[in-house]
Length: 169
Ligand SMILES: [Zn+2]
Image (cartoon, rainbow, N blue to C red; front, side):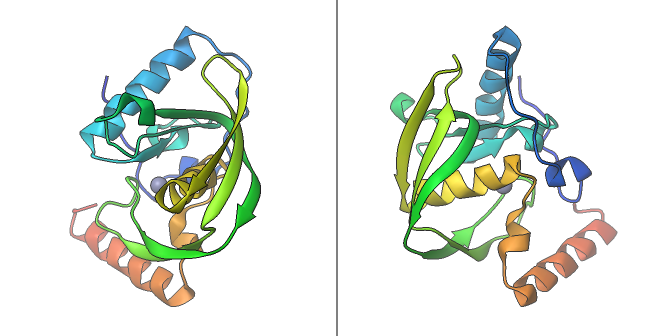
């Protein structure tokens, strides 16, 4: 089922998600729906708060559905190691049409649980590193617009307000 994507400034996007303790069918259904929703929007990452669920869950697929081995489910994720710097353009499904360069770590190691509750660690470099950081920010209630420079943030907030006035947001 394709879910509705919550857009900024919905308050759920700024609220830290609750830790997940039950790895049940309801959770697996939500994960399947999140992949379906992400693919429908041609996205590479989606966090649960973006579909209205304030919990610490995110899905990633850099292949956008083309390579099953690229499908990643991260539950209760945390970053345990960072290295280097990246400054690349990012977008966000909760901010349609907004793309901006954001400072990130070039490499991160994450620790998370899979959909059965098993803990694992994984390294991400470049795009995957950026995606890990962007989506973990979401489950922490942090949005990429607040990682931009003050100048870029103000420009984009003005652009959003203009789109809202014109009924395009
Ligand atoms: Zn996002």
